[in-house]
Length: 205
Image (cartoon, rainbow, N blue to C red; front, side, top):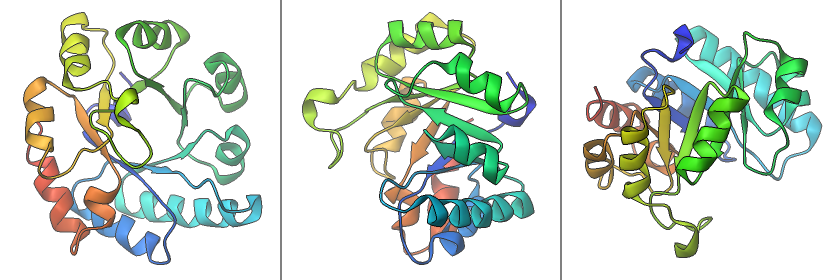
């Protein structure tokens, strides 16, 4: 495990909003360790500007800044990591372009996909979906049994449970054995993102 992940239990995935940087900063103060920029609607120029702003926030607060899917954006923005979905191409290609020091994560929905990601050289896994969400219908839900299966498999990588993880559902996700949580609205929609992040972080080792 890379040193930057040894104590990284809370991963915040962003969504577009005007006060994003402010909310991300508050989340980091509350215990967010990794921030992943995810924005499917902005232009390349807008994304680069946003990435550079969030990278500066993360650097000033001691968190790791990563981007979703986009190797070129990761390079241009100086991101510390890149997250790849199952359909985002081979991890080896991204590794060649970004270098050994950059974290690369992979989304997985089964233990077999997790094993493949380990063999590819992933640094961490995004595991889910735990629950149905607006972007993940019931048919795509892996559920808590996937977490339990990964614990039994003991693959040696940190993994973040994602998909419907909220302050209400997080206790049972932690009880199932998740290394960490990957959240969006649970922190970004909170009245106080710092407090929300602290409550989530307190549920993990």
